[in-house]
Length: 500
Image: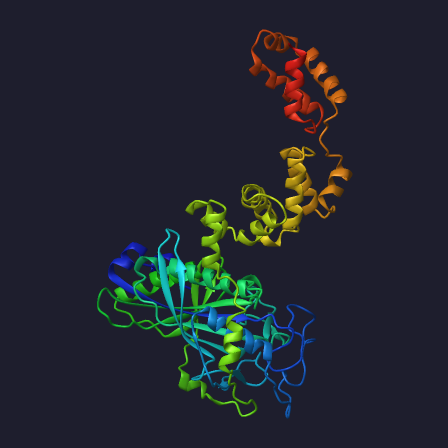
């Protein structure tokens, strides 16, 4: 394990070295079935229940390509401005892992379905950085190993390991960038912005649920350093399966500081895979990195080549949705947002939620206020993503409508939202069950005002003497007496009238 003492200060790193990035993102498609068989493609489930002779590699079992997965791969390629191959095929990538029943992975090697594309990403200060795409190819996922008996959950120190093949054969698209030069001190930020932009694009295409926490989107970050302005390509490391945007940024930054310290001491970087430690923000060594020759690729003999017609490709191009960057530009204009306001929405992953709330009847200002402030606080308190909160945009819009109708105050509205989040039903049901509706009956309000004035005669005298600001104390007393359910505006009117 590398300690902080073994690192170089980041400012010194960027002063002495040029970083080179390469990012490989694996995306699990949410097709109904796996890539080469009819087993359910579902997250979770009892171990080894979504399996069959094909994905367990029984002798004689033959694969069949998932047509929807091919369609998704083409749509991804088109959205990434790639060329789509007129003819391509699968290959066998040979290597041994216990969670790969075939002892090879069915993938694509020198003939990917999509290649030579790019994705423009926006950094925090608005600068646009173009990341060129080398390829996007189809393959299958592996199973999962569970190491039992150790303190860390890793194989080292474990008593035994269990294998779950439910994930084996799940459709994957691997999106590989070309080398990304010129990032300088912004390399970690560029890495994060790229994965974030790619996640948004895939979500817009509706080809994956892009849940990094569940492994349906994973990033391998390749990092190397070379002496400043030398033009020499350094030896790279590959930090595997980084599963959050924050971790992508941290992993790149750490590797830069670790490699720089080694190079400054005259050492050599080992070409290897590394694993990111979430708790410490460090990486640890994995295995020596293989080359393509080590995998002994050869064409998959059990699958026919894929030759998408140009007509089909153009039909799929017409199904592409509005791309995230263009949508944000449109939304910024329609909602009259500043750059900072738009950035807050993007960082909160709230654009879709706000847009759906607006479609349900709220204004953009009202919808943004709820999602980016109060509901974001609730998400942080409950330890979930904003979109995972158990409340829908339609329910938020209903709460907004109840406030606008005068049936709820803002304070009561927050209580209604809590009730919805706690599973107490629709907003109207929560209002009824908790007795939260605003008291607007003049008779009840006049009684509460009279009692408050009688309890504070000195304040009443000030109001009668023309000091209208003092009415706030009486309004506050009435609101307290009615547990916040009084219409504050109407209460103030009654207080002024009573003291006239």
